Image 1 (tube, rainbow, N blue to C red):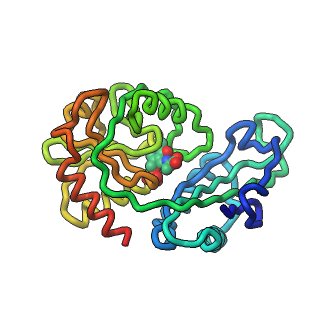
Image 2 (image 1 turned 45 degrees about the horizontal axis):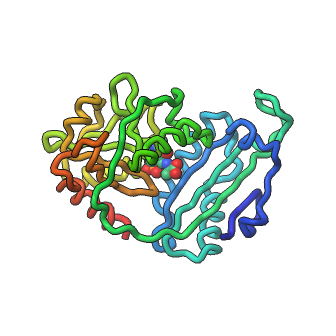
Image 3 (image 1 turned 60 degrees about the horizontal axis):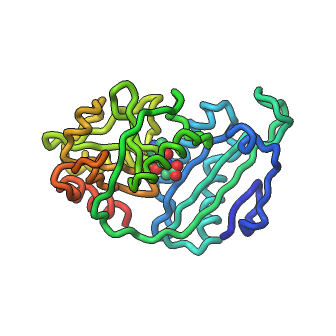
Length: 274
Ligand code: PDD
C-alpha cells in the first residue's frame, strides 16, 4: 500500500511520524473517509468542503488548496491502481512539546492512505443496538478523537450487531460511524443536521436522489419510541453505503427483511455511483 505523508508518497511500512504529534498525544486533528469508484473520487467537492469545515472548527489552517488536495488524491488513487478504493485522510496539528494550548510554530501533519474495496451485494439485513450517546457536543466535527465511538461500536460488535444507534435525551442522533434513516407511515425520516451529528455525505446524497425521484422524506427529530416503531431502519456511510437494519435490540424491524423503500433507494444509489 502506497500512502502519502507530508509531501511524499511511500510504502505504508516506511511512513513514520513523531511520537510528539498532537494527533497521537491529544487526538488533535480531523479526518475524512471517501470512496473511489472506478478510479473516480466520489463526491470529492463535498468531502473537501466538510474537511474545510472541520479544520475551521478546530482553528487549524487548511495546509493545502482544493487543487492540491485533488491532485494528491488523484495521485494516491493511481499509486494504488485505481478501481474501487476507500481513502482515509487526516490532518493533525503536528508535532510539538506537550502542552494543551496550540503551539506557536505549527507544521501540520498530512497523511492519506487508500485500500482496495470490493463492490458489496445488497445486504440481507443486519443487527443494531441502541446506546446512550456518551459523546461530546461537537459531533459535527470529523475529529480523529473517536474513543467514545470506538467503545460504542465495540459494544455493538460484542453482541453480534454491526452498529450502535445513539440516543441523546430521548432522540435518535446517528450511529457510532453512520447516519440513521427510518421509515414510518411511508415517509423516510432522518435527524436534522446539528452539533450532535456528523453531516454525512452519504446522508445528503440519499436525500438528493430521493428528491430527484419524488420519494417523500423529512429531516426531523426522531424519538426513541419512533425508532422502535419504524418499519425500516437504515444506517449510511461512505464505507457501508446504505445498510438495512432488520433487528434492533433483539426486536425484529418491520417484516424482518430489508424494506421496499430501502431497495429502491439502494438501487438509485448504485445507479448514481456508475
Ligand atoms: N464515518 N456519522 C459518524 C459518526 C461517522 O463516523 C460517519 C462516517 C458518518 C457517515 O458519514 P459519511 O456518509 O460522510 O461517510 C456519520 C467514517 C466512514 C469512518 O469514520 O470511518
